[in-house]
Image (tube, rainbow, N blue to C red; front, side, top):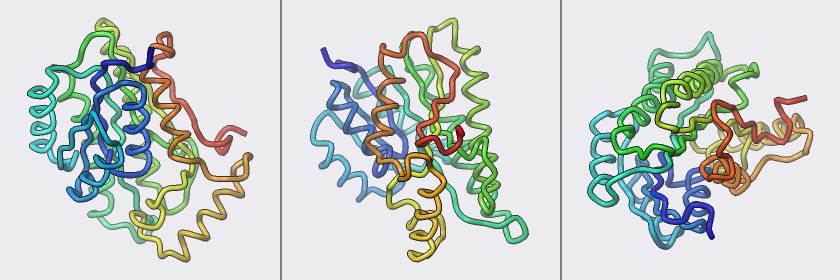
Length: 250
């Protein structure tokens, strides 16, 4: 029996990187996935890469109307949700003295407000006994210069997991956060505001800080998320699972 046989899973930020790798793994384990992201072309390409049992909905999690549209599609196609992987996130480099209001607002609109309402608006469709996984970051316990707004937003995500574990316990819905360390995805060069050379330097620096001596692969994160989504983690709730090669642990 596959670990997620017949389950319905919603994945935000599902068009690339960790979200895409997780969608692929969920489908391999028998789930039907609904993925969302801001760029329609990337979503189409992701659907081709996943191959089957996938529905795409273009949208920005920081826009509540887009979330309403997402769950309207989920309700029409599947009628319920078993698993939610609230993975969409944003993070750009901005030293404290140079950070703008727009930078701060975008970071918190996506990582905090967007995640909050992604979960809230899923609840009417959620089956009791389901699993919610939130993407936090090792930055929720580490000091990362020039990423202070991002780190604070990810600490908020960790806090959500604790509070929602208690709020949803009577429905037997488990809530956990998952904190990746540096992962080998294009995001470092495409979304952080770093130049290609700066991104390469940052990747090398990160690798030197990781006891395992390398960045993680998206598929390694997907394996951890699949564990938290499945009945194999049936007695696990409220935790923050670090998948970071030891970066924030030693």
